[in-house]
Amino acid sequence: MASDRRTLLADTALDVLADEGIRGLTHRAVDRKAALPSGTTSAYFRTRAALLTGLVTRLVQLDQAELHTMAEALPPLRTVEELVDGLALLARQRLTGEGRRRSLARYACAVESVRDRELREILVPRENAGREAVRLFLTARGVTDVEDRSHTLLTCIDGLIFDRLVSGGEVPREALEGLVAAALR
Image (cartoon, rainbow, N blue to C red; front, side, top):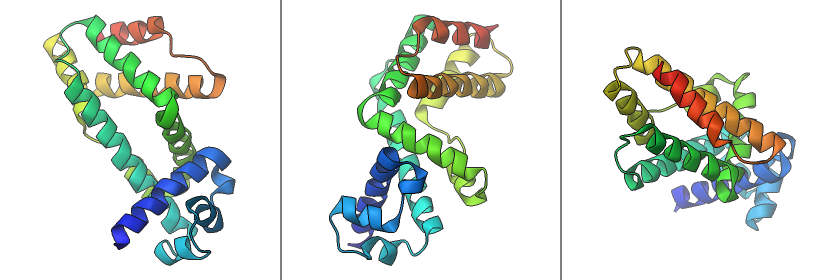
C-alpha cells in the first residue's frame, strides 16, 4: 500500500522535523527514524521539496482532524466563558504531547513557506468546525465584520501559542479573555 507508506513517511518526517528542526529533515533521517532501508523515503518523495509538501499535507490533515474532533466534543458555544474554555483547550493541546510536536513542525514549515508558494497554499487557514464555531459565536453577539474578527482572534491565539512554545508555560486565561473581549468590541 503506497498511500500507507507515504503516510508513515510523512508522519516520521514530522517527528524528525520536531526533533531535529528544518536542517535535520533529510531523506536519510526519515529512513533512519522509520527503521526503513536507506533510499525508501526518496523512492516515495523524490526531492526535499516533495518531502516537505508531503509533510505539510499530512500536518494539515492531522490539524483538521484535531479541530473537527474538538468541535464535536464541545457543546455549542453560548457564553464567553465557554469560548475561552475551548480556546484554552486548543492552546493546551497545541503545547503538550503530540500537539506540541506538530506545533514545532507547523511553525518550521510556516517559515519555510515564506519562500515556497506551494507550501504556503497548503498551510493557508482552512475552513473547519472550530473556525465556524468562532464565527457563529461572534455572529450571535451581533459582530458585523465576523470574518475579519474571527481571523484576527484566531491569529492572535496562534501568536500566543507560538510565544509559549518558544518561552514555555501555558497561555494565560486572562490573555484569552482579553482577546475574546476585543473581538466582541
